[in-house]
Length: 563
Ligand SMILES: Cc1cc2nc3c(=O)[nH]c(=O)nc-3n(C[C@H](O)[C@H](O)[C@H](O)COP(=O)(O)OP(=O)(O)OC[C@H]3O[C@@H](n4cnc5c(N)ncnc54)[C@H](O)[C@@H]3O)c2cc1C
Image (cartoon, rainbow, N blue to C red; front, side):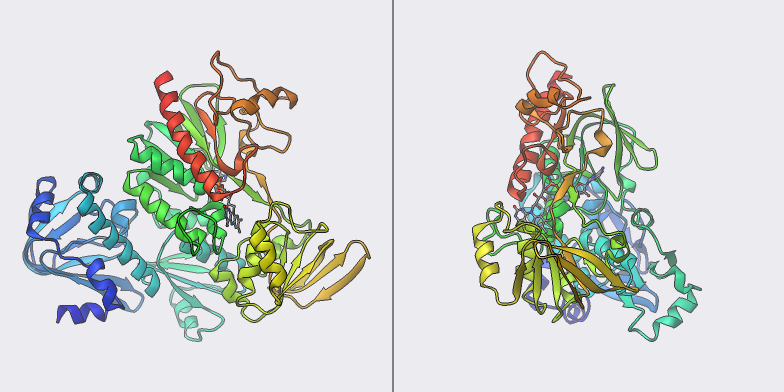
């Protein structure tokens, strides 16, 4: 009976049910007992509700409870728990705010553990760790699949801000319901109910009542309480700036090796890799893995080991003339740390077209994931660039789009493009390669409608009714915030290790100050390391970024013994 009720609610597939809602054995519960306290619960008692922070973890010894979610229309049932089962999903590990209401339906005794006790359990009991983590992840995936969060986004598919918000929520694994105002006729009633003007769209409604009008990403993250657990004035062992593959690897190793570590990320975890629809050459994934999936798994792993994360916050400056070092964030907050791993990667090179920003997210994209591919099913599209990422985007988009025009500035595909990819492009009848070609004009009202490109040798310009352009034209390092503090090469990439010998060649570069030579990933500042795509001489691969992130933590340990 209860099983059927569950089937009708959270879990859509019978196969996933036992793993998302396992029943613990008496022996497993006995291993949890010493970490918690037994609590008597009454029927109707609410144990947690949306927006609560530091929600405890409960194992039902006797009694029953329901998990429901408040929505604009009222409460929606999500799951039911019976004796031997336990509460919680990913927020238990991430420390982010609760998404659901937990209400007792039958009195009994529940075993209650606080967040620290739960993390200690996960860290030291491998069997329970696997059962709990798997259930938390599966429950979150089901919430995402159903779009069941405590968030509703009301927006338009022609609005860049809407796409930006949706991408941010998806890349942060945040379940939400999307209502497209262009298609959903009943949505006007909702806008009227919250007194929203057309200029205030997109609108985000939290927990059925809190309304955010045209929020920026930092406003949305703050409104969702993403970072409340990551604040604090202590001096950390290591601050990792950037949560791409390099930063996430550093976070996993730092936290698993017991370092007090904090990751700061401007946008959403995953970095450039997060915008890749399929990474096919990362070790251990013979059928490929999407950048988002890889990043999601890495974040869960880092959080499980106790890393802290600040999302939608940026490192703006480094105070490097003092120890401990001080990282200054947007908004002026400062964080103190003994060592730093800089993993800020690189940013996309964009065609120099004055109206390009107007179409970003409304016809101009810098990533080709499943979401973008659904916007241009059957349509003619253009991909700008001749490197690996352009090649991957073109082959991926060719699966769903009509013709894919690949616009390459030089006379050939990049020498760094993998051989297998070149072959796939050349053999794909849907991909049309245009060499010596660049975009000269973009046209459109709300959305991109028309693209003009020029073949540079003949000078011939042609105009095309293309509504979607994917810009994959390489990247520049994100190091502006470090100028004057660290030695950089002429393009702004961070010099590390032996490459610091070249530092003097570039004017204004600080010198290595110690007797001992710098470690291999160490920058011109002792105890500050540069890893991944931001480092001079990097190889622009997920695997090498991950490897460098891992190595940097080994070097952080050495630096900490020096201080
Ligand atoms: C579309 C695409 C497809 C790709 N496909 C492959 C592939 O198949 N195989 C492969 O091996 N490689 C691939 N790559 C390359 C690979 O993704 C990169 O080499 C890798 O992501 C580099 O990792 P990183 O952590 O050094 O930097 P990034 O991934 O660039 O991450 C840097 C992070 O730092 C954050 N950040 C920047 N500045 C700040 C700041 N001041 N404060 C806080 N945070 C900040 C950024 O928001 C970003 O999340 C692809 C790249 C792209 C764009």
